[in-house]
Image 1 (spheres, helix red, strand yellow):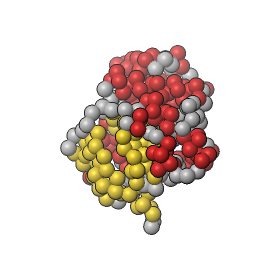
Image 2 (cartoon, rainbow, N blue to C red):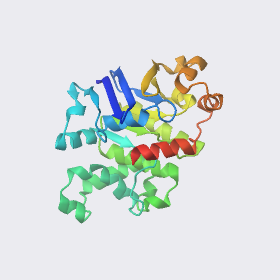
Image 3 (cartoon, rainbow, N blue to C red):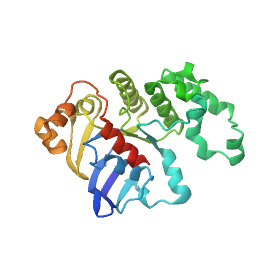
Length: 272
């Protein structure tokens, strides 16, 4: 279903992603792990067409999405929803409207200007919020919600698109352990119940072991591991994260931790 072939992204003289390739044949939950600068966010941004690749192909159902331009690229983005670590909601807009903005590109300019939504779309947005356990937050401003609730609103916005693939770029980076678990449980439930492919960038081995069907480890832009969660040994962790003992300790933690300030700064830079 998804076939990544020799995808490369070069910034200046540095290969942020270096000829990576893998294939996903069904609606799996795939985790991409690695430390900051490994190329995880860059790859997801290329897949969602937020960035162009330098070379390579990403084939989905036989179509090279890296070759799409204009309206075709925007159409692909509606099929390949993106969830960011900093939520990317409109803070002063109510929750229901933020969810409805998932289908903004399907509406006319006039409808958008006057915030006009068909009743069927409003009901669907409320149904999705109810499914995620936050329908009572629908009339509130997004900025009034907790971080975990805001990330669930972002997931609801992605579901509003009815995507075939959900990309999650460090979805728990800004959350405390309890809310991180709620968000990861939500993504896993969507994967299992809806049969949607989920590809999530993660930092910790524990999170990958707990939620993923398959794990891809990246280091310095290259894939250094591709296997099942039970194959994530200490030796594999060293290959992925390097010899930094303190980082490896965090990577193999039994809790779902928050990411470091340095990790968040890197992701924010990549999203700028």
